Amino acid sequence: MVKSVTIVGGGTAGWMAASYLKAAFGDRLSVTLVESRRVPTIGVGEATFSTVRHFFDYLGLTEAEWMPSCSATYKLAIRFENWRAPGHHFYHPFERLRSVDGFPLTDWWLRNGPTGHFDKDSFLIASLCDANKSPRSLDGLLFEAPQEHKETRKRTTLSDQITQFPYAYHFDAALLASFLAKYAMARGVRRIQDDVLDVLLDEHGWIASIATREHGRLSSDLYVDCTGFRSILLNEALAEPFKSYQDTLPNDRAVTLRVPVPPSVEGLRPYTTATAMESGWIWTIPLRGRIGTGYVYASDYCDPEDAEQALRSFVGPACDGLEASHIGMRIGRSRNSWVKNCVAIGLSSGFVEPLESTGIFFIQHGIEQLVKHFPADGWRPETIASYNRAVAHCMDGVREFLVLHYRGAARADNAYWRDTKTRRIPDSLAERVEQWKVKPPDSQSVYPYYHGFEAYSYVAMLLGLGGIPLRAPAALELMDCAAAHREFTLVAETADRLLRNLPTQYEYFQRN
Ligand code: FAD
Image 1 (cartoon, rainbow, N blue to C red):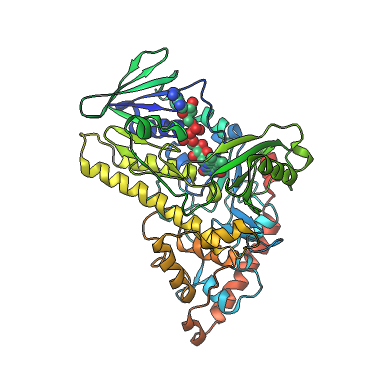
Image 2: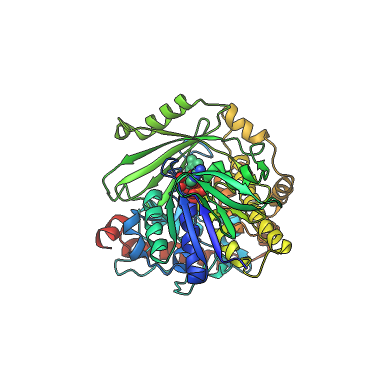
């Protein structure tokens, strides 16, 4: 019976895991979290994916309870700038596509869209982003998005895909970790601030205990490795191999800045921006009172000094005097994230660059899977294998989707961007791309295992990036497009009404 868990690491992964395990199992599970005072957390990870809403719901937290403490804002989309050509932009929104006569609206758009902008013609969220709108009216009601965007106070998980949410959040990672630490400790999690110096194995190679600097040896039934890129339990002590994705994804470093900016209508944008650069891309994440920004780049094409300079020029005078932080990124995943009595969650398990904000999504997915596979009645190899399959599929799927961003971007104006067109792509993706050239992505033709992204995301990215041309399904030539035109008109009329009625995000947070 597994009755006790020790989590090593007090970053976003550690505290999310501690909170979730307590929300799931309460006092029936004893949870200890050990975090070093000397080893800093990674200090980034501030844009999220729309499923994160389920995490807070599961903890029983309303937005009013956690958002203000974490400087959080709404994120309706990612705005991609300059990926096709300088000056071009498009949105990848958190909004499922409407369908007409069995075909998604973007198929009809390819046949005969009303304007040259697939995102505004097909999704409401693109218009809301352009106008810096909040997804909620001043009285707190969620905007009228299509179909499954229903609010629920039930404890939902990623398996309940029906409750996909039309937005995610930006938040201050350090504030979130402190908030969750309070939440978890109030529910009985024991926090130990100390360094883990050694991991001791028993005669079967299972973790017997961890040796700390000041608290001696600590032991429990299960260990959760949340030690970040170091992965001191899984990759170091248990020597589980790490499979790099670097052959398919070029970026391996980042330089970041935290820039104080007074809140304003223009500043509180309800989206993350990903701006393509000479050797990578820059993220811009608006929080209440500052932006988080960073240049993710490939060290084969750019050195850290040039990257920092490029980031500073991009931000402008607001970053004068601010210290930048340089980060080496370990891109890939552990062969298995659960080995013996150790489960790695967070950067210790795996990571792909943050282009689609999936780091925290991986954490959430890992924790949910751990709860679903929890070895309450003992260790079964099948349970562990099933967990490992789910985690591997999820990360491999996101890797495929990110590779598509580079392969699909029309931009090929220098050695870095040309490299992204000739670099290896996973075989399965190469096959899919050929298929998508004759029939846009649908649920049957995208990566088949759960990885968070649905067909509409692939369609939005391919239409926006412009390097892999899509064509409308031939059948539409023989179909009456009157209903599709009515739907395009409905999207435009609904967007106009929302623009009139919704407050800006800035106005919303002035009152809420
Ligand atoms: P860390 O934050 O590194 O925490 C590790 C913890 O382990 C710390 O508490 C440390 O003290 C502790 N520790 C280490 N060694 C010891 C020891 N010997 N003894 C005791 N304690 C120890 N994700 C997103 O979802 N959205 C984003 O926008 C995003 N942007 C990112 C940008 C970059 C450049 C990078 C690199 C990552 C980004 N991520 C993003 C990923 C995200 O930052 C991480 O998934 C998240 O912060 C979780 O990190 P962690 O808790 O696994 O590791």
